[in-house]
Length: 143
Ligand SMILES: [Zn+2]
Image (cartoon, rainbow, N blue to C red; front, side, top):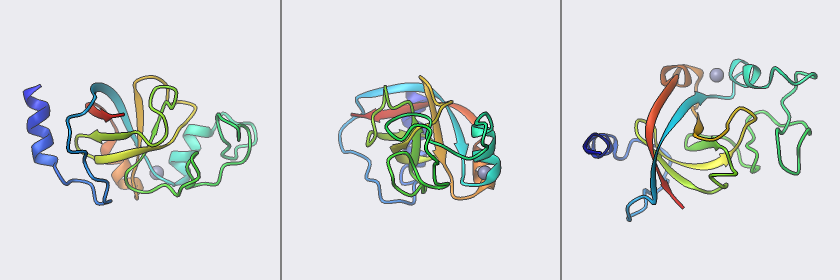
């Protein structure tokens, strides 16, 4: 727990989008497996390569099976820094999260491979997504 506070202090203000960190303490702190992604063919390709048509489509929800515009989130917004894909059965759209090393983010997307204690963080460049890679971090959650 001490380490989490320490990390949070170091990384306070790490995000560049103006998502305010809530004043109150998080409702939950959950250790999650967090990966990075960007808009590039590689990131969207490996995640959606199982679709027969090869085109990105919505994995779930009312739009299921329809073509998904690259860069557009499942909630209809444009993916940007702070956009987080989560399992929306557990973390509904709009949930605010603090990911140590990334900053504040909002659940605005989901994905077929994003199930349970998994998050996917949007990065503006592939390099940054690669640098993040895959990490287990203590994610702070505000409901
Ligand atoms: Zn990429």
